[in-house]
Image (cartoon, rainbow, N blue to C red; front, side, top):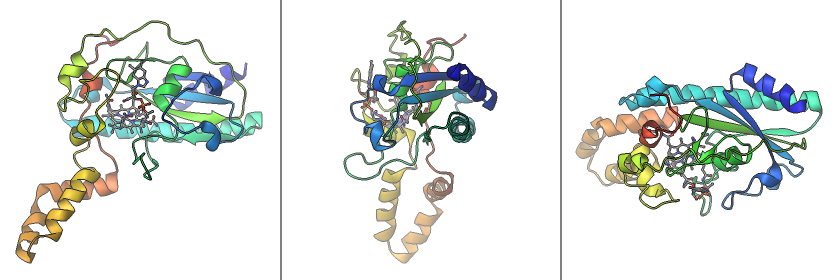
Length: 257
Ligand code: B12
């Protein structure tokens, strides 16, 4: 009854798929204990948003990223509104979980481990299974789906897990990865992935700053005219931008031809 009520609300907001997990079923070794986020957390509501096929298939990655930014914005707003709804209607505490950032930048995590691992939450909430690309595959939208979530103090039984292994072991993702980041099964080589997927991230910013600081005033003028500077400048106000969607794009699982 409660689940159906919440499902309807989230669906009306714009989520494509909605799942529930008892917090005991959420197991993610490298992620923090959810009780450090909300001490009496009992369940997690997971919301999924399909990617737009035209955008994810586009070789123009700005177009893919534009659609992604739309998905991120909707998911942020929805998880916030759903959190408010559940707090008000059921008189329990809730907390929305970030799509991606803010991330813990301190210590070993260095912005590479979310406060909640959405993929592990997706599996626990019966919305998908891990594939060879280390992403999750949803039975309806395949790999072309992104997620957000809400932690709640409301006890919930987990939705039935996805039993079928939708990964076809075709290795298309492995071969399509321009960074060779998926060569080892069950592990993404993060640094290799980052080098291609976030070319205007912190790594490039540090390299650029070093080049600039060490240069003469004349060389500095030239360095400022480098299109790389303009891209870094743009990234500084747009935020994280992905420049690669290939593992999502090539995965044939559950995608209509
Ligand atoms: C940090 C991060 C990254 C980092 C590091 C990735 C990593 N190794 O975790 C970088 C920048 C490299 C990255 C890249 C990408 N990311 Co990212 N990322 C995140 C983020 C913010 C945190 C992930 C995290 O906490 N990882 C640390 C822990 C949990 O990972 P782990 O325990 O080591 O698990 C890893 C392996 O052990 C393995 N694994 C674990 N259990 C199992 C079980 C089985 C059976 C198998 C086979 C594998 C496996 O998979 C994991 C990946 O390496 C999440 C959002 C979130 N809060 O969850 C998005 C998220 C995982 N990213 C996402 C996406 C889409 C991408 C990219 C496609 C980029 C893009 N264009 O969007 C690539 C894909 C790279 C790839 N194929 O692995 C989506 C995934 C959607 C989906 N359908 O699965 C998420 C969930 C964002 C979202 N809100 O939807 N990402």
